[in-house]
Image (cartoon, rainbow, N blue to C red):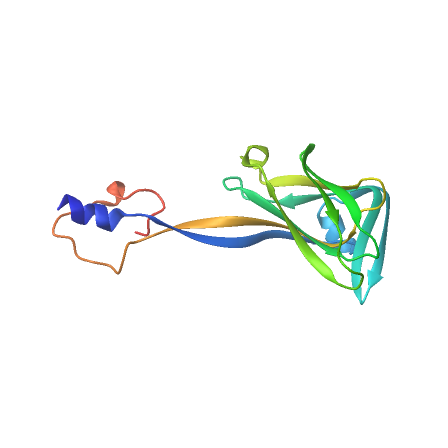
Length: 174
């Protein structure tokens, strides 16, 4: 019987990446909703899509879940030459990168944020700053997190013994 209970109560994580928050760079309403601030920056439009670029820095406040690791996804527009930039989260440098994608194309760059910087936080400050020149033209910034759902190990079954709801671990489908 113990084996049957263990099978019934087995938890299998269902890893599901979810976009938690999105800001559209260069869009006034979206930037205002995300506490935009910047220095030595400019906004523009390419192919009917807004963007923002900075020789200094640009910062946004994005929503996160407080219990899983965060990935910051930056969508940049290509340029005629490589552009160097830093990604800073909560005043901690997490990545220094070079972006070398041809003009007219876009690419998503994902940066994993150490969990120690986001644990217990429901929003984070993300700063993109130029290094030795302007940043790549930013179109969109997202926070992405894995969502773990605890699943029942199979279809509902009748157990040959009683299991009270208090014996089922938190998060298991009841």
